[in-house]
Image 1 (cartoon, rainbow, N blue to C red):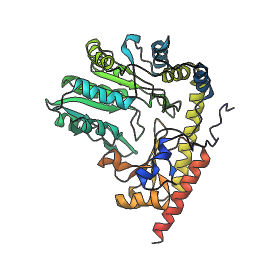
Image 2: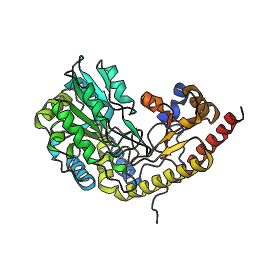
Image 3: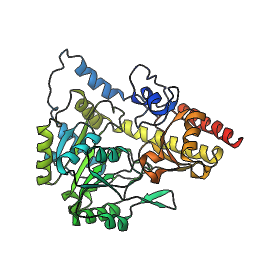
Image 4: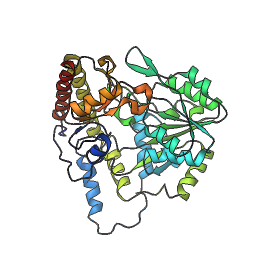
Length: 395
């Protein structure tokens, strides 16, 4: 029997929610139904709210230090859920994963260095590289017949030169939800280790593996991987408190850790606010039952989208994610141009999704759908697509 109500509709008006407030600037219309930003439409669980409320009740919000047991709690969660034994000395607080990526770029690379990404992939990686004045190198993923991707190691080795210093890995992969297997990660580690390339592994979706899949931390697959890796994680996606900035870094290599963490400390990026670490500890000590129920609900939502598309949305194919609450919709059989595809979803269906081209040209013809929401909202969104498709067929 379910303990938590994931069908409850939450009114987020007046909360300055990113996915609502930025509809007009990003999509040109304010009244769209949002399925874009990767936070969920579920209540943050009560045990987290209770922990925060206890601290809210004290009338002074001055400078603070991390709670006692913070690093131990993270290490225990990682060990229990992902089989990776992490020493607490390897861990640091960071103010968000994207900020962590940018910190590595600024601390450990130079303006003439090259940085590799694997599109289609989370677009802030490219933004951070280009915005910080580094040279972008792409190692596009290869599409597989079973609606997925694999890494192209031959192409990777062909683009590596002496200026390539960093590769940013999305693990699990965003937007396609791939849980990379150990053999793939080991091969990636071999190539990068051989060529002196540091790997940032963004593992923020690691606690949302679906269908019995198991997330494998990049740094855990080999000695080489551990030597060249900086892993970023956070409970914020899983427990839906992305507005509380609370992430962590794990760096097994002592020399690399000393260099990076000294930079973080000098810039005070290892200093947290009051509330993020409190939410993290509540999530990682009390959150397992909620996480399991959430995963079951997300799996049901994914099945629902698959069935709905198969029965009603001819030309749109779902790629089943192995992790997270994001579904990669393959719309290429609709035969629409990029602008016409955007018109279909935004102007005709009045929905806000991330278009695939945002993740690189390899994502053209796709749309990313956030299914972390009550079923009734998902149904409304799919019904809108069905109606919108009928309008283009009638043209």
